[in-house]
Each structure stands twice: as C-alpha cells, then as structure tokens.
Image 1 (cartoon, rainbow, N blue to C red):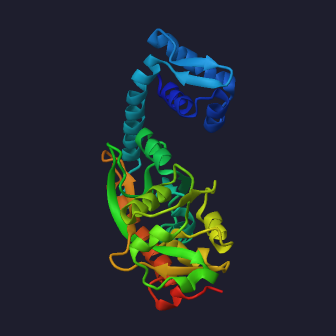
Image 2 (cartoon, rainbow, N blue to C red):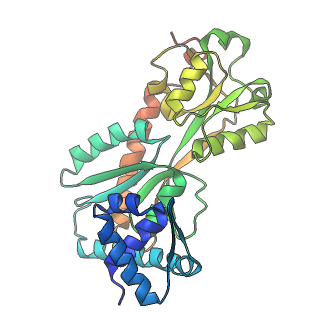
Image 3 (cartoon, rainbow, N blue to C red):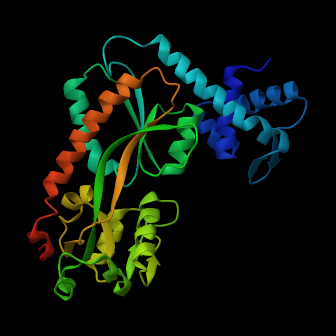
Length: 313
C-alpha cells in the first residue's frame, strides 16, 4: 500500500533529484527518506529512480507515476483546505508563492496590510522562478502564487491583478541623447542588459525587444534587477524596468528612467491557484489586497511624470 508520506517523499526526490537535498527539504534524515522510497519501489515492483554518485534520475516507471503523484497531492491539499474552511476570510495558514521580480516591491506593503486586516492569518512566503512556482502549485506545495502572464500551465486558474508598465533605464549621464517619451524602435540602438535565463522578466523583455527588433542584448550573469541597474548606473548599457520597481531601485542614483511612447509595453501580474480549491473567496480577497499594495508601489514612483526623464541624482 502506498502512503501519502511516500508520495510526498517521492515528489521531493523527483524535484531535487538528490537524496540529501530532498531529505533537507522534508526535514528528515536521508536514511528515513531512502527507506520510504524503497518501500514504494517494492510496491510498484521495480525502481522508480536510477541511483548515481552525483544524484538520481527518474526511471521510465518513475516518470509514468510522477504526474499522477503530483495530481494526487494537489487534490489532497485542496481536500485538507475544506476541513479548515470557515466563514472568516484569510484567517488561517496561507502558503504564498511570488516571483522574484515582484516580491521585493510588493511584499512589504502586502504583508503589512495582511497583518493589519487579517491578524489571524499565518503567511508562508516562497520566492522563486515562475516555472518552479507553477510546479509547487500543481503539487500542492503552495496554495497560490503571484506571477506574470502569460502563465502557460494547464491545470491552473488566474485572477488578473494589475498591469505593470515598463520603462527604459539608462545611465544618467546619457539621458540627454534620448527624447522622452521614447519610441519603442529606439531599442534597436540600445545595448540592453537582461537577467539570466529562467527569469520571467527576461522573457518579457525579450518579447518587447523582438517586437522592437532591438539590437545588441547582453546577459551578464545577473540574477536580480538590482544588480542589473547597478550595471546600468556604471555605464554598461540600458535595461527595462517595471513601474513597481522604479521607486526602490532608483534610490542609489546614477540612473535615468524614461517612459515609452504609447502604447507603452507592460506585463500583467496575476494570482494563480488550482481550480479545485475550496479557498476561492480567500484568493479573491487576497487579490484585492494585492491590487491595493501594487497600486501604492506604482503611485509612489510617479514614473509617468516628465521629471523621470531627467537625471536621478
């Protein structure tokens, strides 16, 4: 007989592909994990993982049951949420995922609002890349996630939250060579610095560059927008910055923020969750709080004003 514990252990090992890392994630010993996986393999009559010194990989049987394990665990998570459902909104544990290009700018305001309006809510936050958050949602590891659309993942539902416009960040000393608002085709003459592969902000910037038929693109190994903007301040090139990041990321100086000519490019931020959830009302209430927090962040930056086309000292 297969137990829920074994399914959860299988899920952790199939995601990490390493016994040590999986055991650490599960907060158990490696022998305990190995024993449960071995019992599961005995039940299915063959190995589910191929062992090697560097880690493990799924066998054909492992791949075959992997998707079903993911769906079962997601259904169990939704079933457990039914037991704790009550009349009051946002009044119990919530496991929230959020992409890295939104988290630093949204979370301070959102968490303050949740603490003020829903003191009984226990929030766990997981910051990660879109692909990982989608996997965590599907497997029931988290309850909902803030990400940017499009979210091309079957089995998830989304609530659109707000549009986050993009601006062009250039070295302050070079702001005079561009007139604001900047036409999108001006990107053809810019050396644009982008994040590493895997970040949705990079994918969104790449799509804007494709539309603009942009020229030279650079990925300099940076994993955060903060690092990219320090490179811009140092004169290494230009980049695209979302509106919600402007106020926080321009405090260090050396950067000019220029608006694009209409129609300005933007990304749509959304709240994703499993359609089978029993907490839809919670997520609708959370969506309103996120909209308010996102609006405060964007209003604070005032990026639409002409003053942003001048040097930020």
